[in-house]
Length: 543
Image (tube, rainbow, N blue to C red; front, side):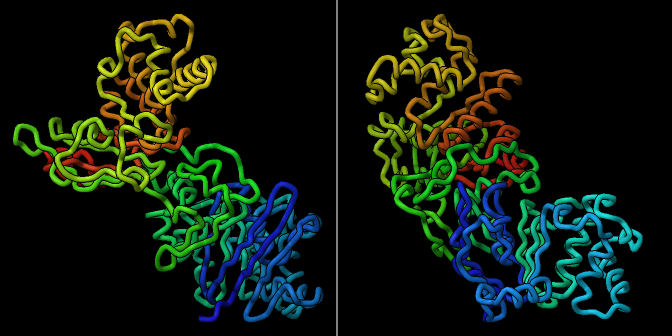
């Protein structure tokens, strides 16, 4: 089908920010959502699509509407087309209205381009009713109107002359729930009549309600383009995943952490590299292009989308002739948190020890970053695999001082060139895990620590080499309720900041629900996915 709208290599350049190139197509009657954080370039894309960039911008690319190139239109013809053949509803509502004209006068002034004087007032009243304004509201000046009224007026202006292509920048941002539903229904009706809509929004529920497809923008580039339902259920770019999992509407039961902070986009490399949880050297070699990964799905990622940090295939283990693991398989993605649950004695700690490389399986394979796990190397090099043991005291030599215990993995890996570098890293890690690195604490034998202190020291030790995969075996089992809450938030916060993949073994369904992106149940030696709402029931059935 010939697209009604084609954005072809759109670019814009400001000091400190570049958009694009962005290429998108919209069919007649299609709504396409543009998602992204503030500063990602959504509003710049909206204005570039209707040729309304500020004079300071350096524009590029083309916009085709019904086979005509808008960039090639003479200024007068472009002005005639604007609002009649294509239009935009802006986000910062008050700034786009004349403060000396009433809301109704704004509508009638635009309607004068197509309707005789006798029809304008009636047409304005009809438009007001469609967007949810009262006729009496049309006599208000912009300064007398609420933000919602002004936003509705801008929507009415965008639709007044029945354009074939409409760009809406945050169309429901200032609206109450009733008004919001009304506006969404109006957009649906106009789309059903053939209007193509580009919907710029930070509200994922708007995208879900209106748009069959969505694109995710970051640093002025499209990171992912996909059917909206598939994007929300299974985002395949690391940025898309972080963005989607930040919406409480989609994850009402889980603590939200957002995307980890880091350096912003840099010229000549992947825009998301500084915040990504799976970057490799190739990410700095150039800006990745959108590449197909399935029907209707594209991502801009040198690794082809979200990559697996650890993969286990058909892991089997027997003790005294009794099968404990019988074909357990899982995939743990980069930057992901997975909770492993199951009744006591079912083999959770056994599986954790196998995955972390401290117990050899009888059968099966473990891959780390796509390669067969070489644990002799992975335990002693940055970006490897580390295990946070259930019994912290058993994992620490009681004769070691805190400083020596934390530093030991880095010493074995020859990580530091000087004692000062080693000391600085130990102090930093102890602060990260919530301990005050006083000289007294650094010199204290680990055998003299409290249970909570030992757990935090073990955590700092596990993070020295910045592992790509951290396996935590019942990390809160020996703590009281307050200690569990504090440690869980600490563990998740560290995992989010460091960007490692986390597999947390737990018997606590509430902790799993709060911290995990996914939950797996170990049952009869195998792993099964568990719905977050059914963890307790699944555990009870597995007893």
